Length: 311
Image 1 (tube, rainbow, N blue to C red):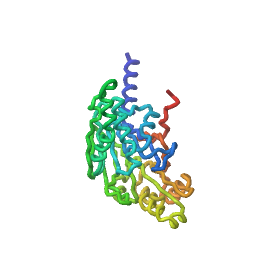
Image 2: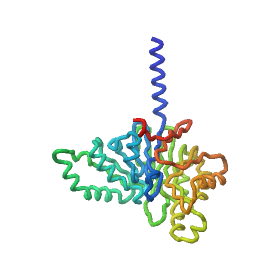
Image 3: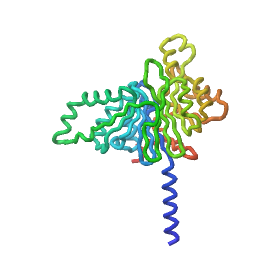
Image 4: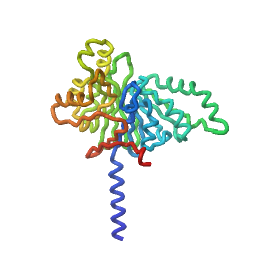
């Protein structure tokens, strides 16, 4: 009897400990540049049995498959802005998720223009939809249902102990509506910058977060001075010197740098060394890689979520 009690106690303890964890997986850590190593921007957050997808870049469905997660299991999406490398995977998510039996409406939170974009996806696939809704496939149109929320700054999602807040960031380059997100689950907090340059509003919302996921860009000074386009890219994104200020002001427990725009032969190691040199204390700063998973808990754990070879 005592043995049965202990087993039950340990099971409950293990389950509760697991339930406290927020699992973050970088599905795509790259830029618009096609790369087999770095797909474009997409981040999956799993907490309390919920799966939240932040941006839907190229190859998102492939990375989910490598994690052994069905595309139909994802039905809640948050968009930072409407640049192509952050939304190219949305037609795939909508259409392939429908084919593979998504059971709930696809709910999408995003900036102004999101509703029009989703309507146009459905128009573009009208012929395919017509074919798949009759024999032999007989898919029901319910699986293509979408709920679109064009967001403003503030609380945009709440379910049980899981909350998502949107805040404005300054991407520049003509982008009028760009958002970052703060995800809170019980006592843990994660901040996703989206595309931005140095943003005081991000610092305000990110201060003392457990995990900061922030974009990064770098290029040699000679290249920046020589080419106005490169200078523009550095102005629209966050450089190592700006990242130093952000980390020092935010004081995050753990920082992961994504959307890695490294031009002119700059290496990832060089980027990290530049940033580390200017930090006020020994902060943990890592470059993201595709299928990098981070368990956010008392002791942050980082590992690869590629289970392709384990099936």
